[in-house]
Image (cartoon, rainbow, N blue to C red; front, side, top):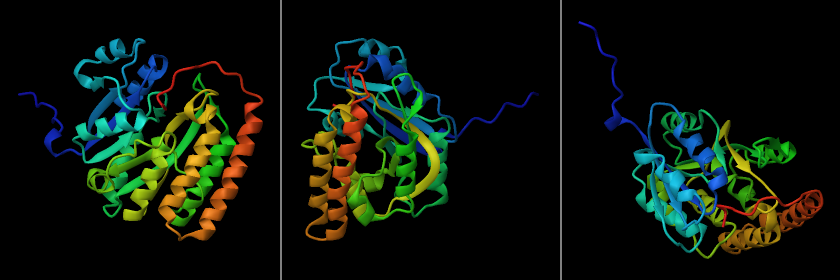
Length: 281
């Protein structure tokens, strides 16, 4: 008798749920989805895509994946609302979200599951993220190096002074996610930063010294085109969490805001807008 290979015990596997908000992102959507579905490891994967009612090829792309993904396409109130809808649909023990123009690095989710299994005290984690352009080539390595230097080890006061955590490199256990609640729909640029500060109040973040994801930057993306508003909203969020404490980190944040805006203004002089859609609405 020929022995059959053992089948993975899906019932006892850790489930990782990834929420992907999207809107008018057909050009990047398939690459983002594939970067999730191609993840391999000892875990069960759930990908939930929430589309804000795109009128490009988004829905046909989503339909082409069949039962491998769950998706919803309807008008929403913005990116935070889309993510909140997706979070309500998740069934995993580990949660993350990936915008539809960003990518997970190969081995990302296996490393995340391993970190949570070997560090049971860790309730949420964050790792390194590089920056890529529209074609997928790495750019702005000096910004990546600066963030990597700032992010270890975790410090709540330092996070108040500057948002050095890249959203696509963050994952959390569902239990702490329920405690933190939903994303604020009134924030348009820094709903992620507000969420990290909420998670940080509940438990310190666990740093993963590995490249987990890629953030796609282009001139008219949300971060590229509206950095003035983003930096202003960043500071307002930091003040709301400091609550008349952490005076020194807030002073640093004010300085860092001026520093970053100045740098982005200089960089913008050398950029030519070429793309109009963005999941970062």
